[in-house]
Length: 418
Image (cartoon, rainbow, N blue to C red; front, side, top):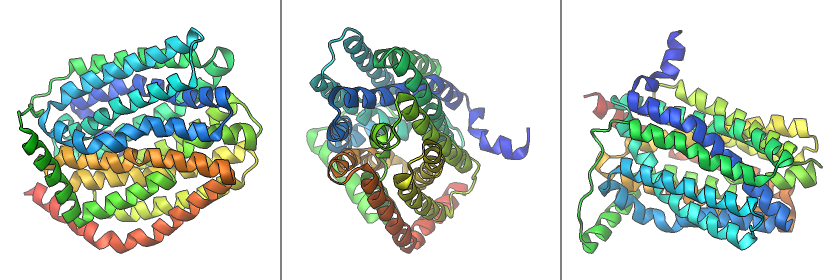
């Protein structure tokens, strides 16, 4: 095995990360089966672009409301046990959704309620997941590699899951997608139970006053750290205008490209290929410095890709452009995560990563509403053009923040090397 390949997959040397990675291999395919099937189900039942956005809003609203509080809990509770509980609840949520669809009892209100339930679970799960990486690798210098490899696995799921979903929906229906997702959580639960985590934080008993003081301290820390503040603001804006682009894929597949569920599956799978290439590229990077330049590249590339995707009327050209769009988005997301994880102080990791989750996923309700409402008024292509222009503006502004971010990363890297 070449040195470059060993460096790319170096985090798999650690047993706990290897187990977690293996469990996610199956589970994340199921997650993407459900994501695609959910959008198709809502659009089939309603034919409404707005309700596609509303469904995404309902799923992501808990992230917006709950994450500031959840960060304090993640800093005080055992993050490993949190993941055991949240993954079990996700399995049950998918099982209930599968039952309703297969039994012919599903309604739009039921879908919206279950979306809120899933969003509430994921608000806790995502924060705990972001905060536990440091316990899955023994050498903190491999933390960025572990984050990038996990993101690559997420995108392998996005590559395989939507293609499979398109075929399953066409042949059988959405219900089987939800059932397969429910069963897929068995793999990640088995992996979690096989882990041996000796460094995970134990819960602490705190008073209500201490809880809110702890939460306020986290906000103050993020605001006073210019590097983290700049990166989170940039990420929040991107999340609103660009990160929810998949919400509109049923509209592009059916109305713009005159296709069907198979067309949808291949377009979303194309986004998985581009994002996978982006995450493998990030996994091969060993130095967390100069990541701001990578973010600028990603914003510019994604901005142009949004515009070209909106103008395309060919399914094969749309898939090709989607590769560049998702690559650009990924090289905004992954470096932002790595930068923040590198800079943050360990005793504030849970609270800071909850605010990261707020900027990344918590802004998603606003992004879903933006995509749905703007597409209802302007049309999906015009909405994508507006998003592309917004990303190009970010690509011109973020370089002005580069100095503060790179100085903080260099200082933290030097501190870790001592």
